Structures are given as structure tokens and as C-alpha cells.
Amino acid sequence: MKVSELKEGMLLRFKEPRLYRFLYDEAGGHWFDCGQFDQSMRVQGTIGRPLMIYLGQEKRDAPSHYGGFWNIRKVSVEGRVAWIFPDAWKSVESV
Image 1 (cartoon, helix red, strand yellow):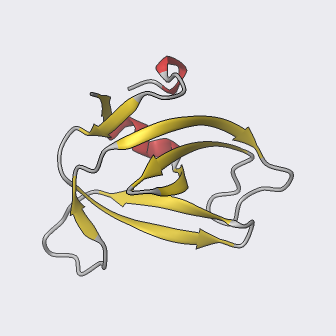
Image 2 (tube, one colour; image 1 turned 30 degrees about the vertical axis):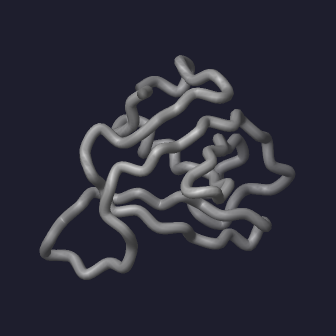
């Protein structure tokens, strides 16, 4: 999915099950970390295809701790508001 196609309120999910977890950022928010599922890796998290609600884009006053991003996109996942990494959009589809 292209980021330019996103609209607030869209319901999204991963195309295939992925490992995901929440990371705390010193800037005061949480990142929704969603890596590629690899059985040989022992990374803590949950494997699945959670439903996400796209909440929009936000411009930060300072770059984030993870990757130095200024423009971030927010999603609601399992009742938590989190920022999503830009490279994760290629694995997301609309429902």
C-alpha cells in the first residue's frame, strides 16, 4: 500500500502474519514495530495480523529516537495509539 493512498479512519491489516511489538520512544510515544517473521530468530513479540485504524499524519518538533523521523503516521492497534515505521507500509493492505 502506498502512503499517499491512506485516508484517516481506514481499516488496515498485514498481508501475511508478522511479528509485532510496541517500542517506547523518548519523544513520548510508542512505535508499532513489525518485523518479518523468521522462526530462527528469538525476538519477543506477537505473531499475527492485527486490525489497525489509520489515524493520520503528525509532524514532530524533534526527530524520533528510532530512525530520526520528523513526519510520522499514527495507527490504533489493539487499543493503543502508536507510530508506524515507514518501511512497514509495503506489508499492509486495506480491509
